[in-house]
Image (spheres, helix red, strand yellow):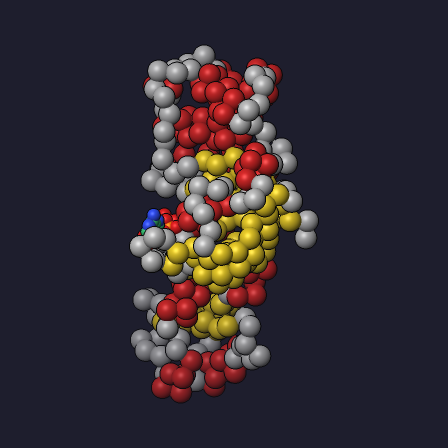
Length: 309
Ligand SMILES: Nc1ncnc2c1ncn2[C@@H]1O[C@H](COP(=O)(O)OP(=O)(O)OP(=O)(O)O)[C@@H](O)[C@H]1O
């Protein structure tokens, strides 16, 4: 992998003694969208803050574009754009100046053409002269992204970009992220909305209690880790599941017209054949069959539960 960010054995203990990261290893490929998924307090923000040099690691090493984030901080940081969770904009400033000012913070020369390009990328070009206070919440979030992109970073960290926003705005933000990827930006976003990771990520990392439990291509994760459901529609409804079928933990539909069998796609034997044979032997005639892949949500819940057990 051509890693633009490489994190090795990262530990973080806060002054309180609380250990927020416990040996995180993570490589982020140039051009990908990686979603870090984890429950509250998992360590997502700590991980981002450490990569961005806001939090000092207790142990471990982080390289960004070949620069060490501790010993070569300025070079590493200049390659990173960070979009924080909270909106912290100057209400009376114009959009254009806000973005231009951020560029200056990184010691970059004024470049109105670059600022205009970033605003266009985020569909803010017609708001360039507007004051921040005149913008909607969704537009302000876009300005935060524009600010983070002003100094031409190669990697963009988005910390919970859609926390507390409505469904429409969330989808809008997903489109923005897809557009940024198309412009060659590497994106790492944290979220605890599983459907967000499912919708936009190339890879998903699951983090819990300061540890990365799994990082994998999203589609592979869903097909390999998942459970599947087999739904059998019955010709005649039944009131209860026959005793002979109890061992399969079948779920009967409320109208008695279908039973559902859940199986592990990773198991050596799925049990499908014997379930179907036994349904037949019990006199349940099948009208139709369908299978359905379980969601990332179920995979996530299972992994986090296994870790706590
Ligand atoms: N400055 C600090 N001092 C002590 N503990 C801290 C500090 N900052 C964070 N923590 C603790 O570290 C743990 C990880 O916090 P972090 O903010 O990284 O989690 P998160 O995964 O981003 O959570 P959320 O989804 O709620 O934003 C939490 O238990 C938190 O209380």
